[in-house]
Length: 118
Length: 147
Length: 358
Image (cartoon, rainbow over all chains, first blue to last red):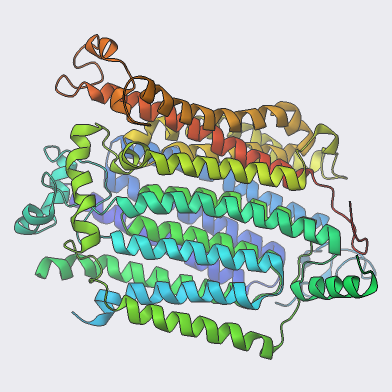
């Protein structure tokens, strides 16, 4: 039927999956909890949005696309709020972000001394 | 067809069940045991749903064959296969194990809640949730204060 | 059969890769001693299982597993480790030997038995060919709901579902008796976690609460036509209350959804379910036989083609019977999960070192 639309939709869905995979690699490779939160949440939201967009293109203009749009709105609201809460919790529990190379934002005598190595 | 296609599903699910069982047997911590029990229960669900899958089937929700969705479903398969194994032109997966596992999942979380509340009360009474320490406290209590 | 291999190949790859992920997750849960990590891995395990259920054409089960396993189960486990310890002791290698041997022995016996099962996906296997096929063939005529799983769950096997609702109710009663009823006196302000820190979360939660409730009602009433039903909707309602409690504090939530009201709702759900069965008995039918839900005079007055079928007047009884029992299941499951949460969240943690709390 709309064959090029299917191909573009499929390509977008694959791109979204690759973006999520990049986010997972980022979580493993980044040094600090804040950079990890950044990697996880941005790629998670972006990957989900691309996938939903691709699926919406595949299913054309129908009820399914409306449901996908509602799911997209929900993800756009909830995922950044979750990342914000995570970063907030990390900050309140004392994790100091890395500023520059090996410099610590707060007093060296108080709080954590840097990222915990896994 | 080789064993990998016909039975690998079941073998892997049995492996998952055994890992869950191992967690239950080997951990002394009550909470870890409950987690292992939850893994075991969900894996048993995997086994049943593997049994329910029919090749080429779709979810057991009746689809009208006359509209485009039904025809797209029917067009994927060999018409003789559909005629032999399908119901009104569509091949469905088996709904009965789905019902069983739906029940089992919700009952599983109910038993998880009860088990965890027992663990919480044990912690309050003994100060620990490790089975070894609880047994030791019980033995020392019995030895020290005969009821 | 060539079509069998053609169709199994594509989904078999996805299926086996998801099973591989599950194996990795299960081994990780077994190895970790940090209970918080084990709980989060358990949530991921449940979610991957839900995806696997979708690949296996089981959307109802996937829905339930995602909501229950990755949602409520995680919350209850987190509540439990907040009341106990978050760390498991290390087991010596000798201690692990006997369980490993037992698991390997049982696993070996199961694998030996499993090799005799019919091939994966075989439509002529005894499980797929007899009773289930009959359900698929006659459910449209006898029950009239497109979702066969709901037809079997609510009508053909309605007695099992009544037992399940009762089990959930009993679990809620058990947890309430052991951990407390969640009285208002137990709701205390958590120290310095309220205030400006949580503006974003508060606003988002306020936006989500009505949306999720609406979605729960949609799932409840749409359970006849698509995946859904009382269990998923009940757990969604409970999750909304839990979200509210996590963001705004247990005290506010207990003022909005009172524990007494919740306890009453759980009992009311089971009563409603059993009551429908009793009405069927009163009208000369068997217990939970919805064909006899309405006496024949009322069934004769149904306008043909309105909801029921002119050829199948019993559809009216079936539809209403399923509607009421799903409502009963909704009340019971939602109230049970909320009371379990109140029990865990309302319990004051006992500081370590004290014994014999009460």
